[in-house]
Image (cartoon, rainbow, N blue to C red; front, side, top):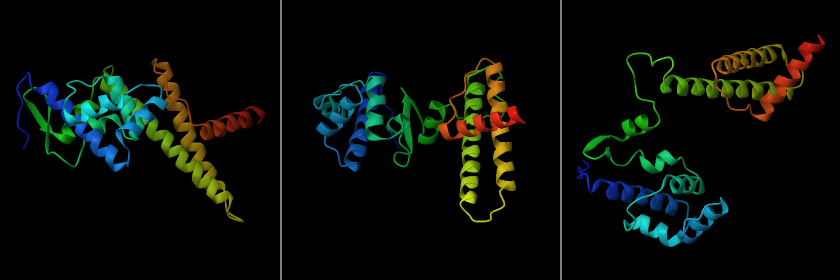
Length: 208
């Protein structure tokens, strides 16, 4: 069980916990502090090895968001996993005097908290949910594309079902994207392989 810190102690204690997780991941990657610092520099941001050591040992009382982002990319982990790592402490102090389960902290940060009611249609949660649904639809279409490509490599394979499945998934995805645009939301670009399928189908429809 985590001991609750005072308001004045919390920032440094939270930063130390993040620094310790950075050190754990760094060691698991087999990187020295100098090597991690160099990896950050290669990403275009300077995180000196001394600053990194101070962060990991509690001698640095704050961590800028920009440093958190570049360190996470250099370590090849999601930033959230450095803030609220799962599988260790059963609770984390997300705010002074406010302890919650580690997963609840992650869900709060990523706006994935379980709701009994629907999120307000114009609220931030609803917008995030639409982008999550779009990402899921992209994944589904990519799976269908891979299945079709696999079938094409099979001699004598019946392509009708695979073609129809991909066409249906792409159609649903494009309808979702059009609805987002109508509501003033800009969907993420399609992966190149999927965009090529859509462009090919669009040309085929135009020439039909």
